[in-house]
Amino acid sequence: MPPFPRHTLSATWLLALLAGCGGGSSATGEAIASAQDATVTASAAAVRPPRPPAPAPAAVPTLAAVGDRLFEDTRLSASGKLACASCHVPTQGHADAAGGFLPLGGLDGTRQGLRSSPSVRYLDQAGAFRFDAQGRPHGGLFWDGRADTRVQQARGPLFNADEMANADVTSLATRLRALPYAADLRAAAGLPAAATDDQLVDAAVTAIARYQADDTKFHAFTSKFDAVQDGRATFTAQEQRGLAAFNDPQRGNCASCHDSRPAPGLGRALFTNFSYHALGVPRNKSQATGNPAFFDLGLCGPQRRDLAGRQDLCGLFRTPSLRNVALTAPYFHNASFASLEDVVAFYATRDIDPTRWYPVVNGQVQRYNDLPPALRTNVHHGAPFRRDGQPPAITPQDAADIVAFLRTLSDGYSAAPSAP
Image (cartoon, rainbow, N blue to C red; front, side):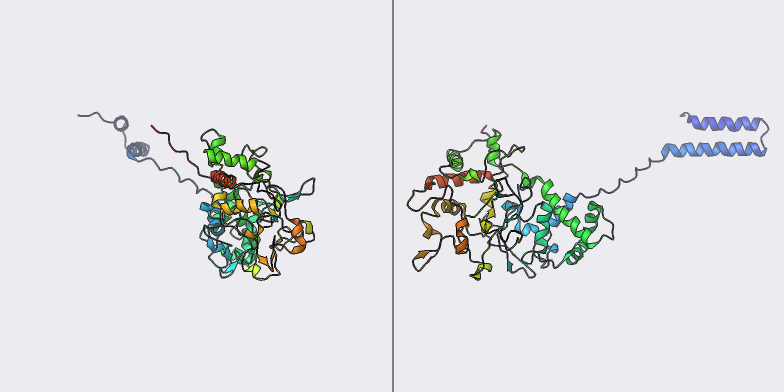
């Protein structure tokens, strides 16, 4: 027969002792009842399952996580068709969609944008728009540098009539409140349920900007070029020749604006110095240029207005990073070139074979025809551009080699495994 549990024996002994002392009194009864309760409680505790821990409080989403959702959401646009990611496609280096021309937006999704969508990667070192000690413009975001921060850049397309076309802050705030994750946006930004329109819109653009600043996709540095710099890969002979021509001030001279050296304090090359130039690219055929009197003057307008009086800056556009350039076609601010091969050929032959690029009217080549005649003196003529009668600085072989090198700047490179 198994032994009794210790707590059972103790209770039985107590009952016997009380009975032997005469029992029957109220105090004795209360003691017996108390002992019985103790026995029941001890027995129940021996078989009761442990109480489950209290559930952890729900995690508050980060601004970057909400910004990721906002970046992909077409419901932020008046048409319901356009998201940030529609014009800044992740698989295309966060630039225009493959095979596209100028982006379409507006209230019904049919209004053509004025400029191509520049990549939103590798912008963290651009800084605010400014003039250097020599009076040359640098920095800023968009093709004309009119945004000083990612927050300002994120806000612009939301209210641009050719893009997401929100009429005003109230219209956008109404759309934000209707999102199924509106509470997450408020929580991430620390806003109350009764947040004002301005608070909600400010939170949304801040979230989109934070997503771009925090997510490594926007500054991955995972190209073959980076792997070579780290000693994990080697260029092919053609890629190596292309880098040499790219850097050579007597040939491509590309590095004078698209610096291939590590940026100060970063340890990685950005392939831009965020400077501005008028390159004389050919006029495109678009909704805007259907009006022969219209010209996109970059720093002088029409989208930025504070420098409208600076005729010396008309036609200048920001130098984009060449990282992921093989993915970001079409090229230049007006999307006038569809391939890297044509871009490099343009640099090589713009002034020595102008009929290849510009129309001829009454026997006269219309050079730099995307600028008014009075402003064509702003066009840049430094290397690699050559005058009529001079040999090209970039030979056909150089051009092919430079394109091969440029293809090493795409993120997502993975070295082939070594043979066993």
